[in-house]
Image (cartoon, rainbow, N blue to C red; front, side, top):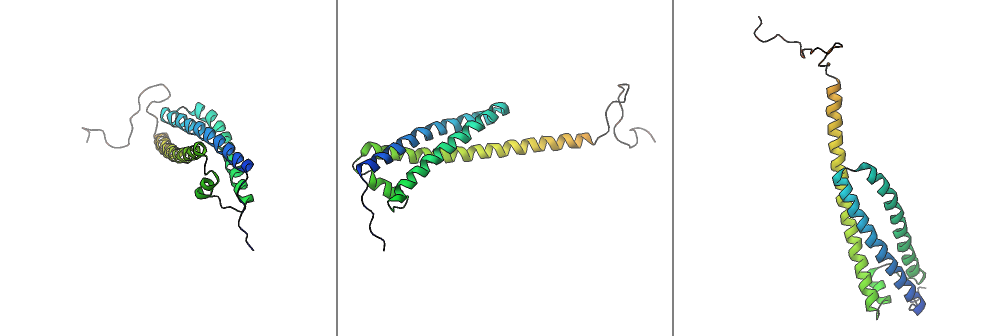
Length: 163
């Protein structure tokens, strides 16, 4: 016995508008943070990346709470959490609809920047792994100098010009 959902009250529409506004602000700041992360990854500034990681995780949790609150508001009215439903709730509120479009655009930008940063991390890790492998293989070579600091020949073959 599914009955049609009652239209949202003015208060519920206002609540949705406030959630969208907060989400737009938080997403804008999150995209800026991802841009800083990209710059730090390119620069190889590990210490700054560690500090940024904590901020990034906290901002992500805030965004998730806002998204969850928005979803719960719609679900309480038996509505699916879709763009079409949100647009129907915001019908007649052009500024809020524009803000919703901004949220969708910022979410795409965040997803793209995060994917790019993931690629940069993967490249950095591959570079570090190659450098580590090179260092480990060099560690298996005999030393170039003896205990007195004299050069030591590498290799066990004949010396050139000897019979």
